[in-house]
Length: 317
Image 1 (cartoon, rainbow, N blue to C red):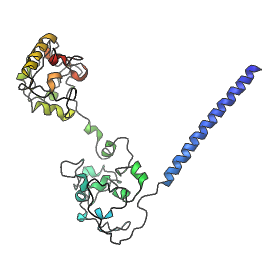
Image 2: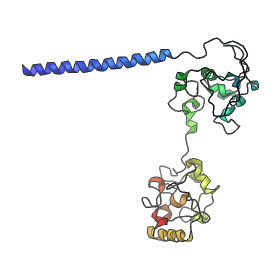
Image 3: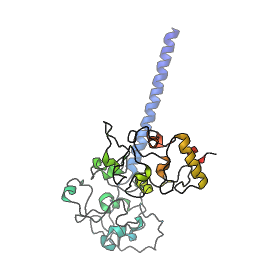
Image 4: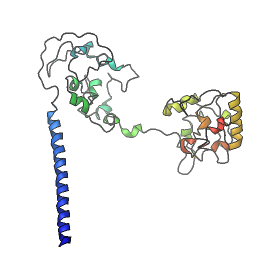
C-alpha cells in the first residue's frame, strides 16, 4: 500500500508541476499579445496641412526619428495622409537624410539611380521606386518613424521595410543574388587534386612565382603588401595592440636572423620593413614544397610561421 501511495503522490506532484508550467506559459502568451495589441499602427491619424512652425537649428547629435517633434526638418508643412508630402529640397533624399552623411561612393547603397529592366523584375513590390528611381524610401519606410512611437523604435530601429531580419544583409538579398556575393578566400590555393589555382596567385601577385625556387625578393606583387592584406583583414595593431609594421632596430634584426637559423624558418621583410608576411604564411599548405623554409606555418592556426612561439623569433634575449 505504501508503494501505491508513493506512486499516487508522485503523479499528483507531476501534474501539479505540469499545470504550473502551463499556467506560466499562458501568462507569458497573454502578456505578449497584450503588448502587440498595444502597439498602434503608424501613420493612421489624419493630419492637417496647417503650416508647421520652424524649429531652431538642431545639433547634429539630435535623433529626430520616432519623436514626432521635428517635422520641419524635412517638411515645409505637415502633409495629409495620401496627399502631397511637401518635402524640402525638392524631395532630394540625399539632402533630407543629410545627417547620415551621404556622399556618392561612400554610402551603403547608391541612390537616385534607375535600376536596369532586369533588376526591376526581381525588386519586390513592397520596395517602391520613385519616378523609376531607387531612393532612401525604397528600403526605409520613413513614415513609420514620423510619430513618437517608442515600441516601433525598439522593434524596427532603422524602419527597414520587411523587418525584422535575422541579418542586416537579408534585406540586401531581397533584390541581389546572394550566390554572387560569396566572399573570395584567396588562401584556398589548391584544387582537390593538389594543383595550384593560378587565378588565386594573381589576387596578390603580378604573375605566379616559381614556388620551388623563388625567394621573397623575387616575387612581384600587384600593390603595397600591407594594403593587399588589409583588403580583407582590415587595419589592426597586433600583436599586443602594438604597431609592428616598421623597420626593426639593428638589435632586433640581429635576433631575427638568429631566429631564422634556430627555428629553420623565414621572416621576410618588405624593403627592410616588418610586414604581415613576416609572421604569417599566406600560402595554403602544399603550395610551397614542404622542404623549403618558406612552407612553415601554412597549416597552423593564424598561419603563424612559428606557432606558439612567434614572439620569440624576434624578441629572444
